Length: 328
Image (cartoon, rainbow, N blue to C red; front, side, top):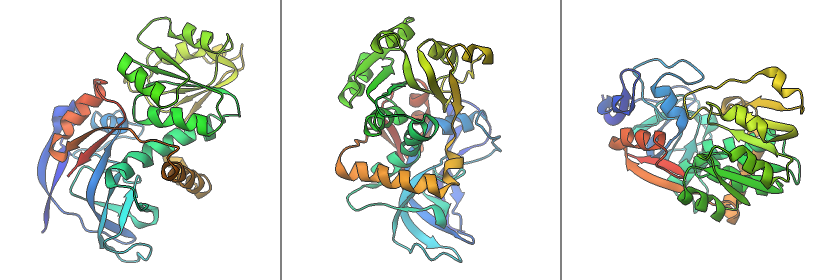
């Protein structure tokens, strides 16, 4: 059987459980294609799968990786929408992206537009669609409303603060943990930047919104952040929860939502991918913004595939900005 290099986690644990090994190259089944991976996206969700704290239970051993960009190497039975040699990107892998080859459903492959490289394609799909839908679909942003973006120098954050403006936000407030990251957020269009390592950051958000609070808050930290967010969420405001980077799910008291008619909304990208009426228009609009130059991608670092453990460690220690890419 043909061999390839892949990253495998034999058991849950810290980044060191990710091993660079020889593995059997998969074959595409009915309705699937084999992709020669040129770039694989690294996401917080990958780190949660590695420690088995993701939304769904993770079986071990497994190869992480939700999204890849590459070239179609082999077409399985019943596939007629792509051909060998096509440049494609997908974010609908359950696992398997951290490898030289990956199998993906043909129905959900997206052609990579001319002028867009593999690294850039891998940087936009999962995090770009997440940023779009936490703002527009779950956040229900109305023109002129204010948006608070936490971890604004991260992969989703750098896209979300730009998309908030493109989708009609009036004031965009960005938080991050260092001056360098705050400067990046400012360069991407944030109106106000706040260091969230300072205890009074909710008061700073209220000051930036003339005491009203932010209309939409994008929450992906966990811990005490959900409770603190409610202190600076506007009346009838929406807090959209889409991650737990701290690994602490936090606590909320439902009755605390009543006084100012607060809403807390959960978001996961998978249901969006099952709704073509939501997926297709958002993907077209996002790719259009990139083509026009209205949306700028921030690729923070590129790692050789064998350095996947280093990429995870850097991501979890908050050393990085923008999107992280693995390159087989």
